[in-house]
Image (cartoon, rainbow, N blue to C red; front, side, top):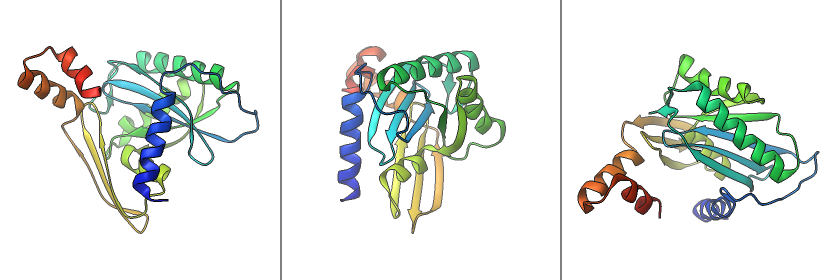
Length: 198
């Protein structure tokens, strides 16, 4: 299957699940992958099966992260706990492990805090990986580029033969796009945000 086709299918599958409290009970022994993304505009919680097919997806708008840095630890933990609870109720299983996504180039304690949030929410933190590399892994991308437009930054990773050969995190993202749309069309920031998402 073509990588772009796979990416589009995964996005459609995830979009169909996102913030829907549907019951999709799975067996307790089924292997799942849990991902947490502490984004600038929202915190995202996703559960995939072992073939990277989305089983659950939800997000909450949050003001706990700024340009990849957690500025409100308590709110981050509370949101992840709520999303974890929703996922467990939806799937009928306990979630004990998760991996976290970070902007490219995040190092030191800024990288560790994502794992700390996951663990404070009641799960063992397996990995913290930069957002574009995480997306490439889900899509089995070995050659090419992934561009992740976040709320405050845009992460870029270039891959060759499965290895990351370039990574960057540019200081512009969806929030900036929203402001440009609001100014250009003369609408409120809230309306511009909704138009951008639509």
